[in-house]
Image 1 (cartoon, one colour):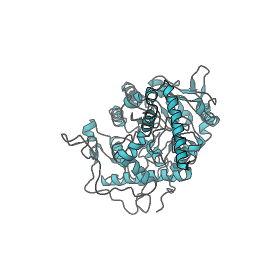
Image 2 (cartoon, rainbow, N blue to C red; image 1 turned 90 degrees about the vertical axis):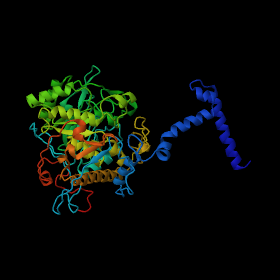
Image 3 (cartoon, helix red, strand yellow; image 1 turned 45 degrees about the vertical axis):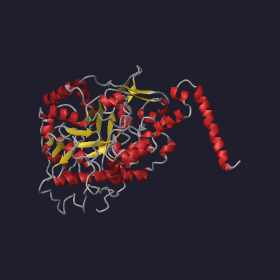
Image 4 (cartoon, one colour; image 1 turned 135 degrees about the vertical axis):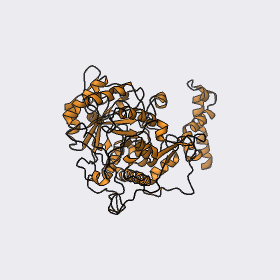
Length: 529
């Protein structure tokens, strides 16, 4: 018997064994009736997403991120040519398409300007100072208008967080911890915004009644004392875009000794993150909690939320107007979802997409004359220059990115985040899969992506005649309504006008005493300076 024939016989033998097994099982009808073809069908189903992604789908039709978007991030992260030629392949007449309106005479960047090519073309700090209005002890001006959104250690691997934090330290953006607590992988040099979720991980304790409660002494021990001077602000999560109004569970098998120590829980047991806070149950109590936390820590305190019913937003705005108390910043998370795994019913239908949610909330505070007092953040697929400018034209002061950050360090949109089998070692605790992700290399790629995003955003800002994106107005961006209505401005589309943000010059921002990040140090990936 030849070797080839022997191989064929062995393969046939194993196929017949599996066919025989499936013929007598009762759980799956297709496999029971068609034991060979049935398995082939399920193999094609498993391979279907990859086949469609690589062989069938066009550059512009995939979701959540299409191939063109992923390629732009990938090329930018590797400092490769991210241009396209022979015209765009995007349908410019499709409803919702963004048109940024350039001025006849762009903003001229002089040779001595901080954003000139010989200086730092990537420098864009936030135009507002977080915590200054409420006279917090340690106000904070983010060095970068683009930062890392809330992703916990546990949902992302230690290698992924190390890469993101190292890259953030190189280019000056901050790293939001996510609700899983402050890990060693958040402490590689970047500024940190500490995220408080409903489980109070890293800042709370078990009450003995099945609930967890915030505890400032625990927060001080596990966070403030561990990373002194680098925790710049606190963000309280009310809800997230992936699953607003729904809690989560950290399975016992993922609750290792290291993760348990970071979160302040017992290892090896299921840990519940409920859909409600025990520290407060209504808006006045939340405001009291914010003020108490800001007083004890000295740090600015903000909130993050997806948007649905607006009644409590109205109540919060009234308290802030009448009492000058409340959050220093508000981050609006889009209902488009994010890195957090969620049931399809939540991801598809609960909470408004970012553009609708933000416009509703911004209007509530604007109508009470509060838009200058609050620093507004946005998150939800905003990690592209045109989306950044649209967001700033609508009233945003900074944006947070999550999935785009993952794409820059190697994510291939396999959509296996919820399984623990992420093939790129990003959204998994599997050490074998994590091995493929080298933090030292991926840190540079993340930093390159942030630099490219900021630089191209600035170039588009200059084309509109402005020095800083905060100067963008809603009339500077049109959106397509299809052939019948042509295009309309954001102002007409969302029926409000953004309040102008106070801005003097980039140089003033560079000299600000509250500037975080790199402050006056060199951007580590700026080779021209």
